[in-house]
Image (cartoon, rainbow, N blue to C red; front, top):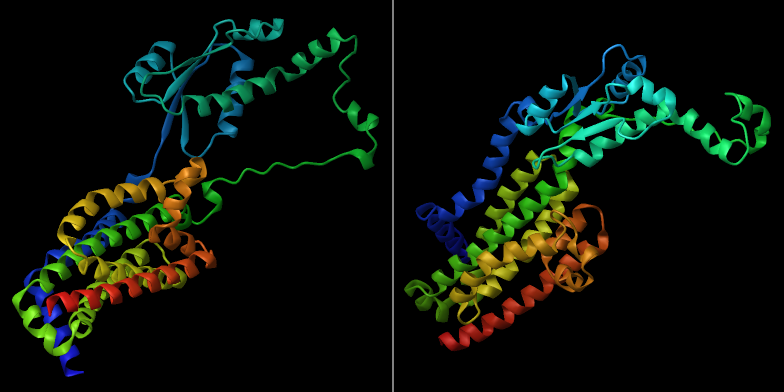
Length: 375
C-alpha cells in the first residue's frame, strides 16, 4: 500500500512540475465558463428581412399585419423603399427582402398572381428559402378564396359561401384541428438557450477527453521509458507502477470533464456516463502506452482521431444514418456510446462497459509482454 501511495504522490508531483497536461484539461471548462459569462444578448441571433409595400394598398397593409402576427421570434421585418431593401441585402445587413408590385391591389383583384412579390437575395443569403414560406402563406391567405373559386368554376361548380360547409358536412364527420404555435417565450430562458447546444457541448466534452487520453498515453509512455521506472519494474511489478499513475491522470480528466458538463447543465446520469467513459479511456490509454512503437502511433492518432469522431460519431450529426458503411466505425468508437448513453440508451452504456473490460484485458496482456521484454 505504501508503494501505491508513493506512486500516487509521484504522479501528482509530476503533473505539478510539468503542468501541460493539466492546462490542456482545464481549457474546456475555462472556455465554457467564459462563454457563459458573455452577455445573453450577445448570443442572440436576429434575422432581418426587408419588406417594400406599395402606398395606399389595403391588401398590402393586410399582408404586413399577417406577417407581423405570425412572425417567428428570431425574424424581424423592416419596412423600407425598394432601393433601401436592395442596398441592405447587398451589403449583408439584411438576410433577404421582398418587393411587392406597385399595382399589387389591382393584380390581386384581377387574379393576376404572377410576379406579385419579388424576393431579393444576395450570395450570402442562407435563409432565403425558409423565409419565403411565411410570405407565401400570408399571400395565400389573401387570395385563397379567389383561387378556389377559379378552380371550382373550371369544373362547373360554384364556390359555396363561407360557413356553408358546416351545413353540408354532418357533425360526426367533422375533424376539428386547433393549431397552436409555441415560441421561445413559452419556455424558460435558460432552457431555450441550452437546448440547441446541449448535445453539441456534450459531444465536445467527450471529444476533448478523448484527445486528453491520447496525451495521457504519451505521458505514460515517456514515464515507462524513464530510468526510475526501469529500475523499479523488477522490484514492484508493472501493475503497481502503472495503475496509480494512470488512475491519477484519468481522475484529473474526469474532474475537468465533470466541471465542463455541470457548466452545460449536465445531470447525474451524464456524470455517471462520463465516469464510465473516462474509465474506458483510461484503460485504452494504458494499453496504448504499452504498445511497441507507441510514440509514433500516438503522433498519428492525435490529428486523425478527432476528425474521425466528428465524422462518424453523433457529435454534429449521425453520419452513420446517412452513410450505412460508416455504422461499424461509429459503433466501434467509445464516444458514440457515451453520447447515446447520456441520451438514455442503456444498451450503449452496456457496450461502453464492455469496451472498458476489453481495453482492460488488452492492457493486462500488453503489460505482461512489456514486463517480460523489460526483464
